[in-house]
Length: 104
Image (cartoon, rainbow, N blue to C red; front, side, top):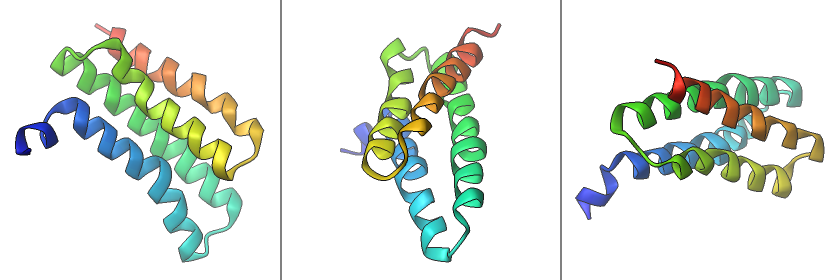
């Protein structure tokens, strides 16, 4: 079990789930305004996460489908909680991940 938990693709799944689902929820509990919550969690934290996923994919030579984990989780979260105009962030996260992955 420990071997599965420490694999890079599993770490990406765990960190993505935390950043996509838990961080906006924590901002809501703290009482942050909705604009602040969306800017910090959607633009700052998730863009940094997309960059980190691209770096991990390049470092560990992970498969292409690993880049889809975070955007799919984000799309599910938008479908459950947020307005549909937030879907336009999904391709941005993919592009950031792929740009970092392809950067030499």
